[in-house]
Length: 123
Image 1 (cartoon, rainbow, N blue to C red):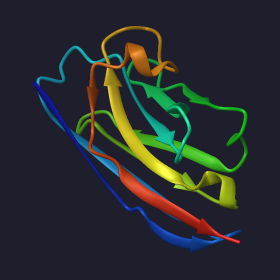
Image 2: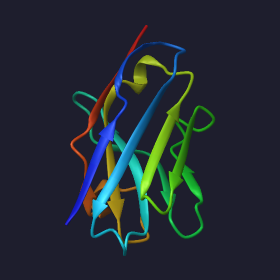
Image 3: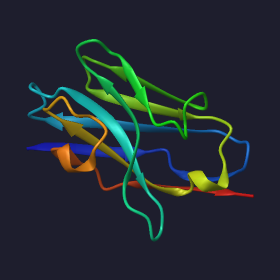
Image 4: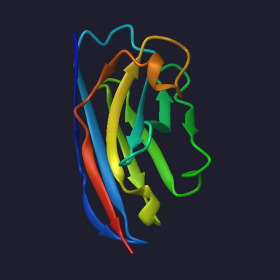
């Protein structure tokens, strides 16, 4: 079992910044990647960013590229998501997820999920 705990969500005005954090505990030794997904009201869960533990290469959705930065601590199995230049369309519940597989941008391939943290961006 793997437990994921997110933090850092909140209310911010458009153009502002937030930093999300996620810490993993449990049986994480075989994890391939950790990442972030988000789900807005009435929308399907979508990929935001991910980071592999091997190459440490970051992956971003086009919608957040250039604004969001994912970072991680390999030893602690922790990831952060620095979100800058936030837009109202970024409003969503953000979920941390891990996968033991090589597909990192599809929710259905994630093995474990956090409970989510709400990010609200006002206009």
